[in-house]
Length: 367
Image (cartoon, rainbow, N blue to C red):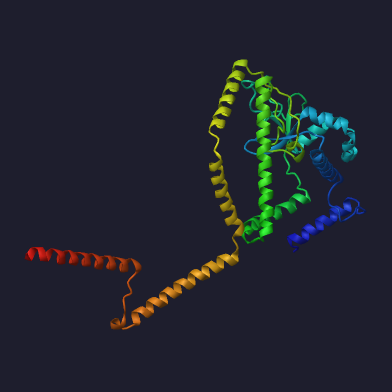
């Protein structure tokens, strides 16, 4: 009687003979399944290529408590029209229409169509936000160009430099913790570099706010230089974008501009009236200099020497106390302190004065 494994082996061999026997025995996958798998890999590569391309404008938003990267449907269409060579990755499907390509990506769950959560114009705005910060899944998962957003569903591959940078964070943390043991010149270099960068950031933000306030009060326009300098999610190019975006808000009323102009003048006069004098600035500078000097001059050698001196002082005090208790009480001499000696001297002078007065008064009494 044959076992179950032998029956399965015989059944497989019969099936191979009936199918021709001349097919490659190492391939058990039908050609149609192979083609589907290849097409899936091709569309995955196409999606990764399109996502990494810098000409497809995209943003980050929150989709059901998850941060996703998304783009607009009209940007996807214009991107493929301007870069038709990207479709060559699709091989046999490169002649598909743009809408068919997008629908294929939706069917393969490489994309998901989204819709804006806030669908009403906010107060003070002329129209809806071009790039909403909060999205929701759209019920009909079909490609569209008109006010349609599409989010990538796969995890983006990290480049090698980001992986290496992630390993450098523990090293940087350890280097920061070891700052007190650095040489003096290295401490000065790090201190002045950090202070210079911090001063540059503060000056840039202050100048940016001053220019915005002046243009808003005088012309009623919102002009932010470096508009993405405080953005949570921005690329390196977007972060240092100098020219501002087009103002989409309504022009403020002249009463509001006049009110804030008066408030600004009052604040400037108040700060000028309460500016610290030269003595206060000198005291503050001395205090800050002492703090910086304490940080720069600290070294393990000085710390250990100070601890050793303190420990040696404690040991000497303990030994002297032990020797004092071991001596004979009859041989111990109490050495008066300087203050006690002065008190005894003053007391003796007072007694002498009283005695002299008594001697002067005694003859008169006897007479």
